[in-house]
Length: 147
Image 1 (tube, rainbow, N blue to C red):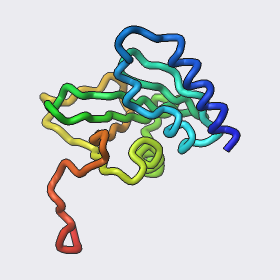
Image 2 (cartoon, helix red, strand yellow; image 1 turned 30 degrees about the horizontal axis):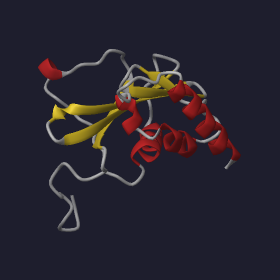
Image 3 (cartoon, rainbow, N blue to C red; image 1 turned 90 degrees about the horizontal axis):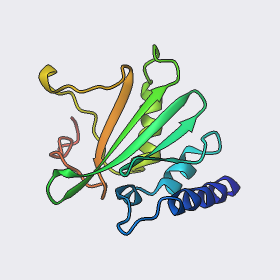
Image 4 (spheres, rainbow, N blue to C red; image 1 turned 90 degrees about the vertical axis):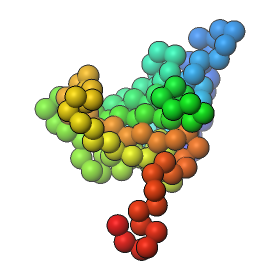
């Protein structure tokens, strides 16, 4: 629990440094909770623009951003994970760690889009998207017991 208290204080200090009349959109992301789920091997979160946070771990990083604009009336979260070695792609285990830390037990999705719509600023990064409320955004494909 001590690691969570330290990160909580650090998160509040970081937020206090950037106070404006309108709260930053990143305030919709609970960086303290994400940091606690990641554990002590991760540094306190740092602001990433107005929309997000970056978490630096041992030889990997996570970026979490808030997106209320892509779908009117729905708040989305984007999360990505990458290794310090740009030649190394994150593993399935890394992706599960990202999901647990950011979305906990909520729904999140990895998207494969047509080549013309593919955007990737950095190679070998994996991404998840999910609604801020954790609700499902796709049909319940497993409703019959199998997918």
